[in-house]
Length: 381
Ligand SMILES: Cc1ncc(COP(=O)(O)O)c(C=O)c1O
Image (cartoon, rainbow, N blue to C red; front, side, top):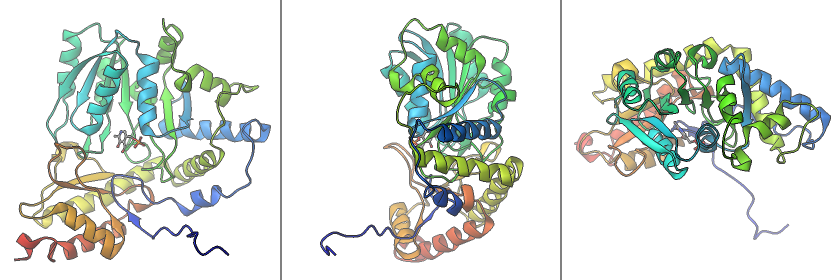
């Protein structure tokens, strides 16, 4: 044995930050099942099963549903580079870090951005988005973040889908923190491009980005003037994931696909509505307890998100020191503010298996203890 080579020995953590969340044990176990090749017909059955379960979790009866072999950021980029071309215009709702990231990505792709902004903790209004579209009727797409993880704000997406239904402007929604955690009906709400991740409410490891693409969005892709970057080519990905016989596009991440397959199965066994309710109940408990301690929530009561709660750090408290104490003393990870201009906050995620009152109480107890110590001198005195 070579003692100079350390064995992998990560500490146990309760992951209650903005994601990743703890992986469901059944999902971890699925990753140790027999390895297959990406061109094995047995594996192609698994791809179809996964795509079918994902369609049910997205509630998307038609169009194309498949996961991309990368994280949520790549899902965002896939939407932009497939649905928009250089010189196009997009209206982007920005009320936090991820709305701004959409705008930045679109600009890098040569797309002109019409930003519609709201302050940290507020929600971009659908009226403001529709007014921006009326002022820029040539915009090819409206993009919003359904669940803004940087602020804990949920966007009224169904209403926006209804407002856009009769036009030919596409709707892209960032569902990274909403899929399987809050009500989401991609088909019924008229969303043309939804993307998500695996490491939040699905409780699988990071590494895949589930997508749902409407028929009319696919039509837009088919009629493009310019080619889509190879990695994100939805029509080529469809030839591997859905069409038979398969056409090779890239070596699929087999074990990540096993993990997502098992995670989606778990969601459907639990029941999508039951899972949404579980996330809502855990968050309602956490948010009420936070407020009962005299702490403030960043998001207003009308648009508070369940899987992620942003708590204002009280005056005189060192927010980062509190986070550090939770990690050191209790093995609990919570998040802080994201980006240089974020107000001081803690971001507490109750996602996947961690969406429970018991987990919320563990975080609250640890937070109480930290606030009573030298990490928070102003409150302790
Ligand atoms: C709302 C939102 N969009 C996009 C992303 C980017 O996803 P990833 O970090 O998986 O690339 C995140 C990550 O936390 C997110 O919360």
